[in-house]
Amino acid sequence: MSRERIDFETLADWAEGRLPDEEARAVEERLAGADEETRAGAEWLREFYRLGEGVVLEGPPEGQRAELAKAFEDYAEGRRLPGPLKRLTATLSFGGGLQPLSGVRSAGGSEGQLVYTTEAADVALNFRRRPGNGKLDLDGQIFPNDEAEAGVFGVQILSGAEEVGTTATDELGEFAFEGVAPGRYQILLSSDAVEILISPVELNA
Image (tube, rainbow, N blue to C red; front, side):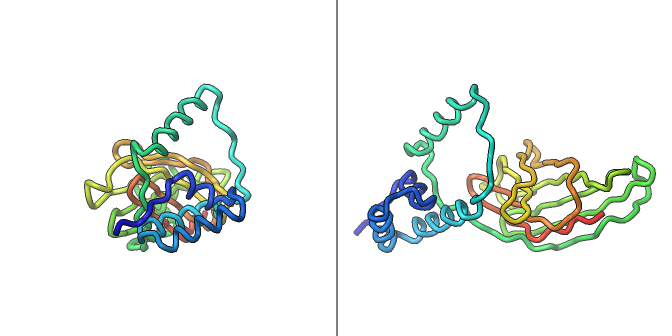
């Protein structure tokens, strides 16, 4: 007997708390009998919206609004059916704080490197202190272990629920942030197939 599927739009409305109480209870009843993948995806959505509470994002430029709406419409209609992401927490396998290095191009510079490992990919982070203001430039690269995990990753630097910076990897899996204040952060790397959380990341000047 096949289990009933719940469409993505309904799950998103439920996770964000937009449904009336009666409809929300009906979704929860349907989830109780849903397959494991659907339940896992629903819990991921709920956690995603919970973490996003209080984060204010500016709307896209008017010229991009129609394109974004069309992309989401195609996505929701099932041309690319959403599925639960593989959610992984990275483990630090190599790490060093900022320290003077010989042979660097800028006199007086100091650098640090952190390498994290998961079953899906390794992530290398390099950070360099800016002379004068003490802020850091951060760059990194993701190395997928499987071709299925390859592709563009979105990269976010988070301080609690606050987004400090966001970017995307290039075709080589590289990304960069400039002028990051020293501190303790989480870094979230997300593709269509996998989500990798690096936490905590200590960036110290």
